[in-house]
Length: 422
Ligand code: GDP
Ligand code: IMO
Ligand code: MG
Image 1 (tube, rainbow, N blue to C red):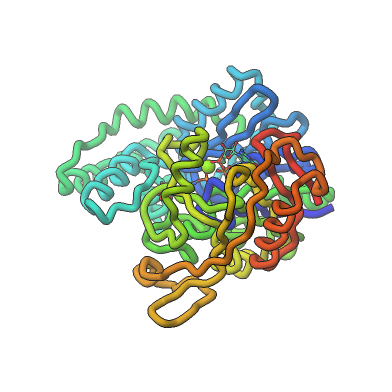
Image 2 (cartoon, helix red, strand yellow; image 1 turned 45 degrees about the horizontal axis):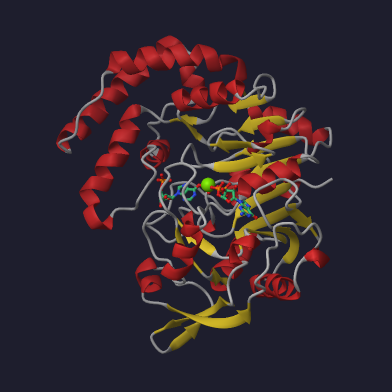
C-alpha cells in the first residue's frame, strides 16, 4: 500500500495523465492539489481520447474517487463544462467526484487581468494559458480571494463579488482594458453553484478517513517542476507549487502519510510558453511536429522541443525527493541516428551541474552533451523491457542514472497497453 505523489520533472506535459490513468487501476483515490484549468492531461483509452483540465485523470476508471483539493484554483463554469463533456462521452461523474470547499475560484476579471498583464509585458511575456491562474493565486495570497465555500452561500457570495468586481474594474480601467459586469457574473456563478453543490465538501476530512481505512491515494501533479512558483525558472513559471510539497499543502494530507514520489519525464524535453530552455533544438522540434506530436493539450500551441536535460531532472529529483521515474515518449526518438543527453551546463568558463536560480543566468548557460547511438526501429509494440532494442535500453538506463532515481516505467506510446513496468 503506497500513497504516491506523481510530479512532472520537467516543464509540464510529461505524460502525467497517461501514467496516472495507468496507475489508477491499482489506486482508490486520485487527488489534484494545485494548478487549475491551465493543465491539459491527455488519456487515450482504445480509440477514445480524453483531455482532463481540472478533473483528476482517475475519473476515467470506474470505482475510483477523484478529489479536487483545496490547493486548486477552480473556474466553476469551465469545471461544469468539463463535467458535461465527460458525461457526453459516457463517463460517470457523480459521487465519484469531490470538490474542496476551500478551493479558490477563478473569476472573469482574473482572466482579463492575466491577458492584460501579458500584453503589457510585450516581448517579456510569460506565455501563460490565459486562464486567469496567476491573478487567482495572487488574490489568494493577498487574502482577497473568493472560495468554493463562499460560492455555496449565495447572499454572501454576491456581496463579496460586488466588492471584488468594483476593485478589479478600477484596475482593468487603469490598464485600458474592458471591465466586467457584476450582475452577469453573479447570475452565471450562482447558477453553476447549484450544479456543483452536490460535489462540494471538506475534502480534508474525506482524505483523512480514507487514510485510516488504508485506501491508496495517488496525487496527480499538474504542470512540472520548472514551472513551480518557488523552484522554477521564475518569473517564467505558473503560480502554484507544482513540486511534491504542493501535494501536501494542497490536499491537507500530512507529508509523512505519503510514501513515494514518482517523477514523470519525457525521453526528451519540451516546454510551452516563454522562458529559458537550455537544450532547445529546432531539428528535434521539426521532427516531432512533423510526426504530429507536441502540440499543447490546452492551448494547441506548438511545444518547444529539445534534448533530454539531466541537469534539470537531477535537480527535480532533489526538490521532489523522486524515488522512481516514469520515462514517456521513448518512441519519439525511434528515428534518430544519434541522441544527445545534456549532463552539465557551461556558464562562462565554469562547468555546473545545478541550474542557476536566476533564469537570466540560465539563458546564458550552454548545454554540455554526451552522445548515444540511436536504435532506428519502432519501439511502439514493446511490452517488456527486454523487447526494447539494446540501444534504447541503454539510453533509458543512462538517463535514469544521470537523473539519480530508479527507472520504474517506460512508455512507448500514448495507449494504456504501451506501458512497460520494470
Ligand atoms: P500531461 O500534461 O503531463 O498529462 O501531458 P499531455 O497530455 O499534455 O502531453 C503528453 C502527450 O504525450 C499526450 O498527447 C499523450 O497522449 C502523449 N503520450 C504520453 N506518453 C506517450 C508515449 O510514451 N508515447 C507517445 N507517442 N505519446 C505519449
Ligand atoms: P500540464 O499539467 C505545460 C505554462 C504556460 C506558461 C506558464 C504560466 O498539462 O503539464 P499559467 O497559465 O499557468 O499562468 O502559465 O506555465 N503552463 C504549462 N505548460 N503544461 C502545463 O500543464 C502548463 N500549465 C501552465 O505555458 O509558460
Ligand atoms: Mg499537459
